Amino acid sequence: MGLAGFRRRGGTDLIGPAFAIVGVLGFAFKAILIKLAYASTRIDAVTLLTLRMIYSAPFFALMAWWSTRGPEAKPLARRDWLSIAWLGFIGYYLSSLVDFMGLQYVTAALERLMLYLYPTIVVVLSALFFKQRITGRIIVALALSYVGILLVFARDLEFAGDPAALWLGAALVFASSFLYACYLVGVGPVIARLGSMRFIALAMLTSALFIFIHFLATRPVTALLVPARIHLLSLTMAVFSTVLPTYLIAEAIKRIGANRTSLLGSMGPLFTIWLGSWLLDEPVHAIQLVGAALVLAGVALVTLRPARN
Image (cartoon, rainbow, N blue to C red; front, side, top):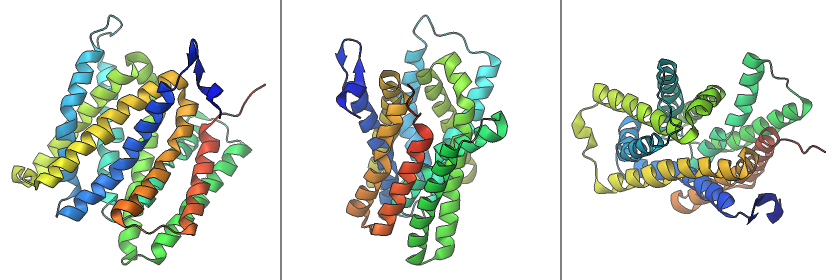
């Protein structure tokens, strides 16, 4: 794609692609921060997720307030609150929880690649529930994606010290991808009614409430008394891998469209693989790179619409 692909009225817009790249890199960095926290001290997934949301919630509260200031912001109906609660539960609470749990057992690279499968799951769910046709192009995309992930998983399994733990971690991360796909299938009409930033802010606040309830029901408050390094990692995760990329990706989609944003999103797994090797000493092998290439190619076939004459 050349520079002309990013043209808007009035000239060339580099802000949209820049927002997409920085947002994608922010999301990709999340797994690295989680693995660094696990390596630093004994901390469980629920406590770490709670710390992330403690630092994220004030930003999303500000975004929610800001999004209601415009004249186009309509009062929320009962169905809107129910949709926000449900989608926040599956898309940001439950999906995040099983992802954090899975990262206790799998590498950051495998986690990012498995999460990146969510567009393929969306396609299958849409075919099952909305009778959307599965074309030959989609079948090829699914085959590429899942052959690729099997190659990466088989390579990790070969060198795993505890194969059962790897299977558990992979199942948890795939469950996270599946839950996020379910969220995406149902989120469209709600965003159309409320606007993307208003919905995301309210859904994230709702998920924070679920997380806080979960933590208080299962952990003592003293569990939050962790080393300063964990607080710093949690704050970094909240700002640079949660709040900022959420806003930047939404703005990128507004400026350059979902297809081009998805194309730039393919940088995410590659960035995670590189950071995992650099910061976590995760080994990188040719089979892993081939598997990653197959996954990226398959997801690109699913997410990018073919050109029309």
